Length: 427
Ligand SMILES: *Cc1c(COP(=O)(O)O)cnc(C)c1O
View (cartoon, rainbow, N blue to C red):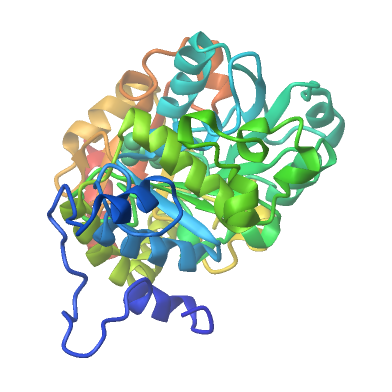
């Protein structure tokens, strides 16, 4: 499908039925697959033949949906995971071991920050967190000889900073490491990080890709462009035989296009087992079929709500990169020319208490630990997703105590604005 426009890939990518086959992707609700001889199956275990044997490793429904996301991002290989958390964990742990180091933007999802700074630190991996708006010199200074990757988010959740992907890609490549981009908020409809130099893309498909609050999921896509063999000493897991997998050398057997995802499947999915259920992959695909249509409406509503808030006397500040004058407007014009996302953040005058009162008064918008849903929802991160952080860490993550994260759904923007207006009136 690579010769089609992205809108067409959203609808038909990943699965092309043959004569008399189901029009919709079949849900292969089977843990296991049958073979005539042990020899047939042995070849699959040795990764000598491709085929299915156990759904923890691969499943046809999941592969079709991963294939669609791979096409949407313009990658060479992709895998689904049970959640965005699993996708980000695997993407880093696939190339960084105990004793290694990773450079990450400070403006990342709270769960990812926790994963990196607490849990992966316990596993012996060190992270240096760096302001996404840092100078090239500051970025350079974050690297160490044992640095194995650079990580950032296209549009940070919930800070809504826009990452200068090219700046981060240049620095990563100058130090011989890949750039991993979490592209959850932008989706490939609005930004394709591989076109700006990123090497690996991750998603929480739970957000816009699913889009209906129906299933938690994640995805990892490889661009196939990072040459692990050029830095073979740094990435022995990809370039030397894997004793835990019949001595296979991933870059030799699967090439640059397939090595990263095959290793993540054969080792990490085998051992950690964070698979997406085929049923959820089917639901995810239903979301993907309308992703391009929905993103346009999410962005339209985000823009309308941001413009309304900017002129409201009870609002102290608004962050939306589609607003001229926003700190990230220029970067958004470059990386997100067709729109960013439906999430707007702002401060209600009066601080934390006023923000909480405002949210209680909303009728259409629901208070939820969720974003990027068809139904408008909002959250006060300082008392929810980011509550484990102190004020200093909150500031570094771009989350002020008065910040309200408002995720515009697919409703009519006139109704959303009327709801906000009446809720503010009562504050
Ligand atoms: C939600 C989110 C995650 C975590 O995804 P889950 O599917 O909830 O595990 C990771 N990154 C970003 C940017 C997110 O918004």
